Length: 386
Figure 1 (cartoon, rainbow, N blue to C red):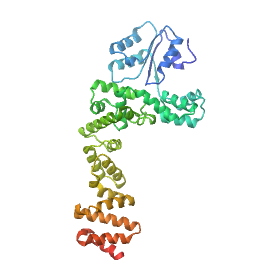
Figure 2: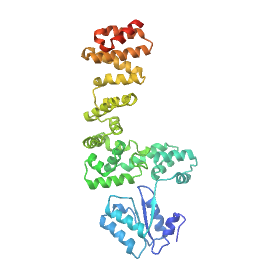
Figure 3: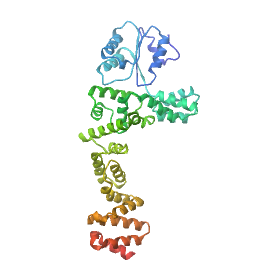
Figure 4: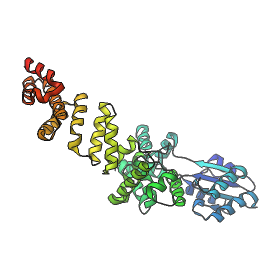
């Protein structure tokens, strides 16, 4: 009755009278291939693929047949934990059938799979596994590319692109993850502006896509950037704007999410103000990146120039500090006395560090003791040293 192509646990389950088997796995984990092999082994058994696509009443009927049916039945489905009828099917399968879970490739499975493509280099296989997250179709695309002398990374990325084509809902959910959002119904509802039922479906589809890491909070490397490209600039910007709004409205904006939004090109006063405020209270190394992100998000570069110069000097980035203070001093007439004195102090310190004490003295001589304020003693010392 069993076939050499069938996994041992499946072959054993098919010996039951009647056989009842529930196969659960994410997208492209090999469910359909397994069901085709089962059909060849037991051509008269009832086989149902993609049960998660069925209406609720049909799914409940499948669960009932697993308990009371006189004939063998094999059902394959992606997990859908937010649907009550799917939870019923899962619990029925656990109690009255053999449940087989199909997961991403392990290194052992990937090594075995690679041999079909004439690949035996374990380093290459591990690299493919890491890049694809163990998704079978992505790994196969990469292995096929290696066999053909093509770029395996590009092949895997192309496969992701094909998967997302025509599926803007899933692309939106995955884009949200790439921006630092959570693929949970609450965030999807708020950020994408969709109803709760659709948000539940998209959350489940995202987790079952095989395009998220094990923790579910990051895209696998092969999917990086693909959801954004699939949505297009306007669609991606809409997702980013929605994520910012829902996080700000719920007071849940974080530095990692804000930084990703700025890096993605989103400009918004709320984002810029948040990043600048976080920079003000951060250590110099972190503040430097946050101020730069704030400028990308739309903050006035001139308003932040002095603070950026201070943190640049504090982190030893003298070239940036010098460039910023040069720009600041060009508009000296518009500065407050305190800001002017601070800019001169930074510029003079940088110049001294570069061995240009004369430049430091010139700056303080130009500033004069009246405008130097509390820095007047520093200026006097520099003038004496020069």
